[in-house]
Image (cartoon, rainbow, N blue to C red; front, side, top):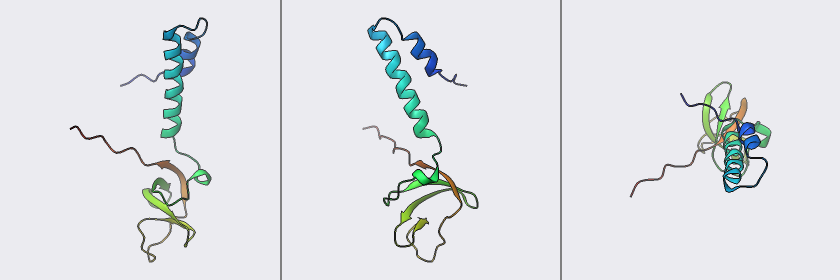
Amino acid sequence: MTERVNTAQLRRQATGDVQPEHMMLRAAANELDELRTAAAWQPMHTAPKDGHSIIIHDVGQGIVVVSWNHDRCGWEWGHDPNEPLFSDAVGWKPLPLLPVSAS
């Protein structure tokens, strides 16, 4: 199991003289915080309504990939007007980056 990095501890270790190692520790701690925030479930009121697909956690359906439909004013899966909209979403995440293929 991977040990969770304590970013506050990294910052404390990086105080004092501004040595290259300290700057790298601070940068690593900041990047870890940003990655943790990006990986966390976000409140639905912050979800982008620009048509891009996102992952939602819907109480009735579970984890679903959806996008906002401006015409129907709701989150939909696919573009079938006969499909129901998702209305019980409690959080969202951006889609992960696609893997980079080895060439």
